[in-house]
Amino acid sequence: MIKLNKVSKHYPGKTIALKDIDLSIESGEFVSIVGQSGTGKTTIIKLIIAEERPTAGQIIVGGWDITNIRDREIPYLRRQIGVIFQDFKLLPKKTVFENIAFALQTCAVPTVKINQIVPQVIKIVGLEGKEKRYPDQLSGGEQQRVVIARSLAHKPKLLVADEPTGNLDSLNTIEIIDLLKKINELGTTVILVTHDRDVVNSLRRRVITIEDGQIVADQVRGRYIL
Image 1: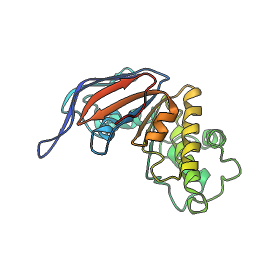
Image 2: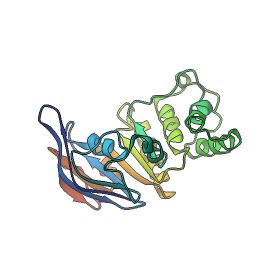
Image 3: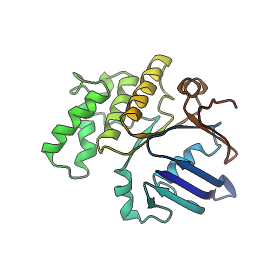
Image 4: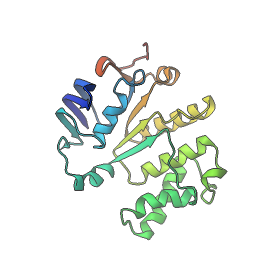
């Protein structure tokens, strides 16, 4: 599914975000990438979704070498990857249904198909009955569920969640992590980037630990021990 071969990322001012990273994630895995702030976790995600380009090395996603991906090809890559960030980025003047539908409308998906897909993903995230509500009428956890539903609209093979529970209380955090586990069980590969020790240790899934831009641990059923 994902391979990073000897990947490094340098920024102006001699800042080194990643150093010679080798990483392989198989289809269907649930992987947590952990580490303190500024260690390179988010940089890995930006490289996988082609928001950034590597300074050196090779990146393969779903059999596609995206190391030198052309700008016009990026939208096709993004349709295969669902992305969830800490900031919900919902459109405040659109309802739950409309926020999810908008992700499909921008890709010229026919209205008939949109009306089939949106109820399906709303059901997956457990927001039935709230289709007509606006973001400010939802709790933080519910808003994040809308974001997850939106990310599932294109039926991605990979779901990337970068600090998805950073703005949530403990109860909503548990519910969102349970939802990510459910999505993984349905066959989607999930990459969770977090610094939340409790979340990672409760999952008991594969844990990749990043420190100073390098992988210092890769455990099959790991714990966040830094």
